[in-house]
Structure formats: C-alpha cells, structure tokens
Length: 273
Ligand code: ADP
Image 1 (cartoon, rainbow, N blue to C red):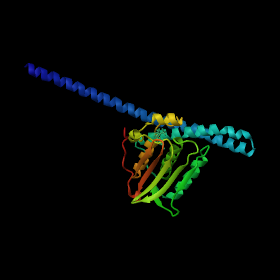
Image 2 (cartoon, protein in one colour):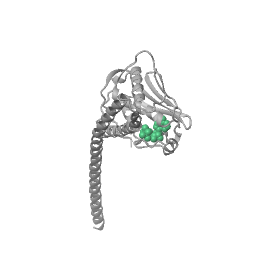
Image 3 (spheres, helix red, strand yellow):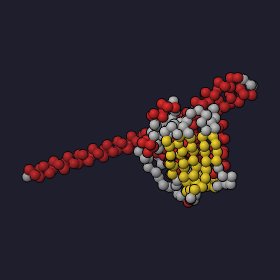
Image 4 (cartoon, rainbow, N blue to C red):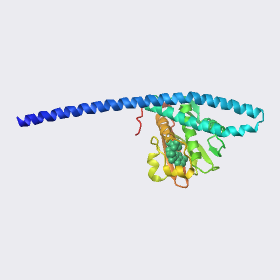
C-alpha cells in the first residue's frame, strides 16, 4: 500500500510539473509573439517620420545648393545621421520579417555586373566622404534570377562594413566572377580584420567584436547586418564566407549557385540563435 501511495504521489508531482512546463511554454510563446509584434510596429512607426525627415533634408539641400549658400555643408552631418538611422531601422524591419517568416524574395532576371556598378554609384552618392571602391566585374552580362532589393541590401551592407572597419581612405574592392558552378561576389578590405576565434560568431544576431569597436571608434551598428545578409543569401540557395586576418583585412564572399533561379525560396530558415 505504501508503494502505491508513493507511486500516486509521484504521478501527481509529474502531472503538476507537466502543467508548469506547459504553462511556461505558453507564456514564452506569448512573450515571443509580443516581441515580434513590437519589433514590427516600432520599425514601421520609425520608418515614416524618418522618410519625412529625409525628404525635407533633401529638399533643403537642393535649395541651399541652388542659392549657393555655404550653409549646405552644415547639412552633411544631419544627412549622415539620417542615413545611419535609416540603416538601423531597415535592419530592424528585416529582422522582423525574418522572425515572422515573412522574408520572401521577389526575384527577377538581373544582369549582375550592371547591378554591382549601379550599387557602387548609389553607395558612393550616399556616403560622405565617399571611400575609394575598386570594381572588378566582367564586361559581358551575367544574368541571375535574384531579388534585386535584397541582394543590393547584402552588397551595400558588406561595402559599408568594409568602410566602417578600415582606416579612412583605405580602398575597398568589389569583384564579381564565375567560379565552378557559382557566381562569386567578393568584398575585400585592408582594415582591422577579425580574430579567428570570433569568426564563427559574426553571423549571429546582435554579435559585434568588442575590440574592433575600440580600434575603429565605430559604435554604429546593432550587429545585425551579417545575420540578415546570411539569411538573404541562404534564401537564394547560396552561402557567405569570410577570410580574415587581424591587421590585414577581410574578404567576404557571397557564393550563389549559377542556376539560382531553380532554387525554391520556400526554405524557411529558423533563426540561428
Ligand atoms: P555591425 O552593425 O556591428 O557592423 P554586422 O552584423 O554587419 O554588424 O557585423 C558583425 C560584426 O562583425 C561587426 O560588429 C564587426 O565586429 C565584424 N565585422 C563585420 N564586417 C567586418 C569587416 N569588414 N572587418 C572587420 N570586422 C568586421
């Protein structure tokens, strides 16, 4: 009888534990959903006033430029701050899309060398002072079925990282070539480089190398760019890799299968951490 009582007590205990786990799981799922909803709402809400601010500043810039006013130079730091905020808000929006499984690709046949040239022009026009970017792309067209906006986001992110983590005036190299069955887009810099032991972490959400921050004085960034880039590239059926040495610089290579159009983007990627 005692054994039976003990068994009964154990069963009750197990049942109560099971209920606690279920309850905790429900709470965590609800908290996670609330976080996703907040992220989505906050990033959307921030985007609207920021676009307004950007539009007004552009207008003011044109007016001051037309009237030959020296005041136009005072706008530069404001324009830079707006651009930085835009990157942060767009990163939050992208994260929100990834977390809620809404990051879908809108593919179109794209001439990749031309896309690289256009992105460089866009990037240089929006960076003050503009860095030196050396471009090496084939003269003949190379067509790929990619999401132009998202692929542009990846390349711009790699270019701005290359600039952020390099001394001022150091050149940045962007190249595009076909290797085996892959289209390889590489962004190389001669900057601070990344210690080998942290390389496995740089594609994680919110990860930043603390010592690099000190070296370059760059505190801008949430540690989201590479995570987002990796998600976008994997959606295209490709992958991203890095070769880096402290003090010598880094090369980030995006490798896309040449038959990228045949890879279905239905693969839902779970967040890596
Ligand atoms: P962040 O907004 O911090 O730049 P990323 O996800 O783009 O976020 O990069 C993660 C971290 O990887 C950075 O904080 C930086 O420490 C390191 N990193 C990325 N690109 C480079 C680079 N080109 N050179 C050196 N370190 C880099």
